[in-house]
Every structure is written in structure tokens, then in C-alpha cells.
Amino acid sequence: MPRALRHLVLVLGDQLNLDAAAFDDFDPAMDAVWMAEVGHEATQVWSTKPRIAVFLSAMRHFRDALRARGATVHYRAMDDHHAPTLEAALAEDLARLRPEAVIAVTPGEWRLTQSLPSTCRDAGVRWIERDDAHFLASREDFARWAKGRKEYRMEYFYREMRREHAVLMDGDQPAGGQWNFDHDNREAFDARGPGFLPAPIRFDPDATTREVIDLVERRFAAHPGRLASFDWPVTPEDADAAVRDFIAHRLPLFGRYQDAMWTGEPWLYHSRISAALNLKLLDPRRVISAAVAAWEEGGAPLAAVEGFVRQVLGWREFIRGMYWLRMPVFLEDNALDAHEPLPGLYWTGDTEMRCLAEAVGQTLDHGYAHHIHRLMVTGLFAQLVGVEPKRVHEWYLAVYVDAVEWVELPNVLGMSQYADGGKMTSKPYVASGKYIERMSNYCANCPYDPAKAIGPKACPFTTLYWDFLDRHRARFERHPRTALQWKNLARKPEAELAAIREAAAALRARLRAAPNPQTASQTGRVPEETTP
Image 1 (tube, rainbow, N blue to C red):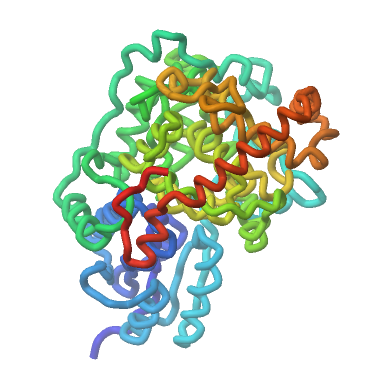
Image 2 (image 1 turned 180 degrees about the vertical axis):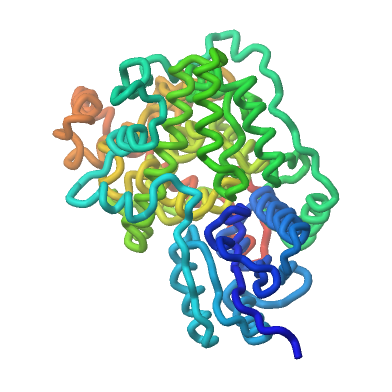
């Protein structure tokens, strides 16, 4: 008679840490682990090949690490089963394995916090959910901080986190006498560009990753994205090497150039560790302590280290708190009443706008773009066009290797698209093409002039920027953080504004009429021509 199974530990693709709370009382003699690859998780949004490959490769390496430790792992590889959804796969194995209970860390997606416990209840199996100790602030901690607030600002939360965890503190005061070193950071390159940069450490695909790449190319051939340059860290050892490489070679200038962009340079001074963090191959405490140690040992200036720590200890934790505080209503936010479809160029990068061609192109090549590409190029353009926020969210969730819903959705809906009406940020992040010109060399290689809003060489960003201000004048013209932008609008003659409105309407019409490969994939027809 087979032995009874006590606990089945459920591990999702973004929960790949051996010290997770789900393993706290794990006994290999009585317990087992359950993991599954399901095609639906790659198709509920039209996931790119790099994103699918990162998740599957990291999952398979984690499976092998568990087995090397003596754990029994019930692993459903994609080619070995036909369950249509994660929930269906789990239900099949619950009926077969009959565990006393399923133990899991809280999923990083609200949908799964509803469907997985329900699947267990339907099977008559107890569901035990444990808090995710990967994060430095629990959901309850954040809810206590947020209680009574009408607006939520990361800066104040970040300061409390610094105090609580004694990070970059000098007693009860911030190291260096200030909390925020923004004035020392966020410079652009001069005309010479970034100069010599040591290439980030590469992680060439091993046999397991090559199997995954072959699977993705075969099973998801029609999906966007490319795998020729795939070299992401997919194990804790690789992720730790990526941290060391960043600390040694790019952290010292990270703060100064974290917002800079340059043609053909997707990485610049950024860390390439966000995917490893979000899949939990890395502990954020390790990342924070390594950055702080670099400052303490004289290897990086305080401004750079503080700017980086703010991303991990401040923004990352704040974003997660906002997700759980506001879901599921967050997903339906649309404060600016935006309803345009997502332009097809987001799936191809095929556009004469050099900034968008660069940002989307490197996204398709690597599953990556840094935060200014996301906020002030792809995100800005979608907001100025007036794309429905949920469609923008779906694109970001689909294309980036670090996209897990708890981190992606608030960044897109709250910060990038201002869909929450200001709960997370005090004003919309909108700018003309002049901002992109200031922070990059893209405009020098573009047929459009960022200074022009109308005419044959008008920059679409600039046209749509003034149109955005015009359309949302009543909402923002008296806002204390945006009044200057709307005062500039008031100086424009009515005839010029009418021409801008006409040009913006024509641009939206062209974007709507352009072929869209996502639409074609849903109908089974892929267009030969994808240029907007």
C-alpha cells in the first residue's frame, strides 16, 4: 500500500526560493512538491518568447535543485500533459495523489489567490497559505502604513523602511544627511555617448535552457520576441554572479545615468537582476546589503547606492503593497477615460519613431527595457495616444522577463498611465519629444523633429503631448504640480491648437488602421506587412 502524502507543496513559477515559508516543515519522507508548466499561462496574455523561456528554464532548474536535495517533485512538463489551465492540472493531480493538504506561499497574482484555494476545496483538500517572507514588508505591514491615507507616496514609505531595517542610516538620520539624492542622479550622456562599458556577464544556455528554447520555438512559434541572444540568469548561482558583476562594474555610475538612453545600448549601467529578484532566485536583502557594502568600502558613491537601494527597498516593496491594497479594482482603473487600442507597432517595433523602434526592438530581442524606456517611451506614447489602460497592462505583462502581475500592474496602471487618478503619483508622467531628445541620442537619428507639433516633420510625441494637455485641461490646469505645463498650453493660439487636435486625430486613425499582429494571431492570419 503506498504511503499517505501529508503535504503537497505547490510552487509557482515566480516562487523559486528554497527558503520559502512553504518549506518550513517540509519532510521528504511525508511530503512532496508540485509544479506545472501550462500553456495557458503563456497565452492568457500574448507572452513573448524570452519571457516564456525565462520562467520555464528557471522552473526546471529549481525542480532539479529540489530533487538533488532528496525531495519528490511532481513536475508536469508542458509536453507531458494536456491540462488546459494551471487549475485543471492541479485538480487532476489532487485526485491522483490525495494529499492531506496543499501548502503554498501567497501567489503573486490576485487571480490565483482565488482560483487555487477554490480548486483545493472542490477536491476536498485543505489549502494552507503562508505569507511570502521574501519581501521586507508584509501585506499587513503595508496596510497598516496605508490606513487613513487618501494618497500613497513611495517617498514616505521608503523612509519608514530605511528606519525599520537600518539601511543607509546614521543613527536616526539618513546617511549623508538626506534621504534622496535625485539631484546628483539622472544625467544624460553628452554627445560622445556612454563611451566604453564592460558588457554585463553572460549566462550561456546550458542543456536544460536549450531544451526550453527548443520547446518555446516549437510550441509558441507565432508569439512575438526572439531567443537568439537569450542569456538570462536562471539559477540562484547565476543570479548571485549577476549581482556581483553589477556591483563591481556598473553600480558606481548607476545613479548618474539611470535615466539615460542610447542607440544600440540596452543595458548601460543597469543591473539585469529584476527578473531574478521577481522569480525569487535572489533575496532582496542580499542585494541591498551588497550595494550598501560597496559604499561602505569606497567602491561606489552614496548617491548611486541610495538611488539603487530606493528601487529595491522603496519602490519594489511599495508597488507590491499597492497591488494587494487595491486589487481587484485596480485592474479596472481608467481615470483618464482612455479607450484606444494598443498600436500594432508594440508587437513589432516597426516604426520610423526611433525611440519606439529602439525600446520595442530591444524588448523583443531580450525581454528587457530599463525603467525610462518603459515609463517615458512606450508608456508615455500609450498614455498620449489614449490607449485603454488594461491593454497597456497586458502588453507589459506579456513582453518583459521580469513581469509578474504584482509588480507590473501597479507600475503600469498607477505610475505609467495615471489610470488610478493620482493615488500613487501626484501627476501624470507626460512630456513632449523634447524630453526624449534630452535623455538620449534617438532624435538625432529620427525623421521627426521633437520641437515641432504640426507639419510633416512633427514629432508624434510632441503632437500628442499638446493634445493630451488640451484634452485634460479641466482636470489638471489648476493642479499645483502640473499648472506650469497647462500655462504653457494657454499661450498657444487657438488656430495652432486646432491644427494640433487635427494632427493628433489623424495620427490615432493611422495607428488604428495599421496592421496588428496580435489581432492577426487571434484570427489565425498573420499579416505580411506590419509597418504602421
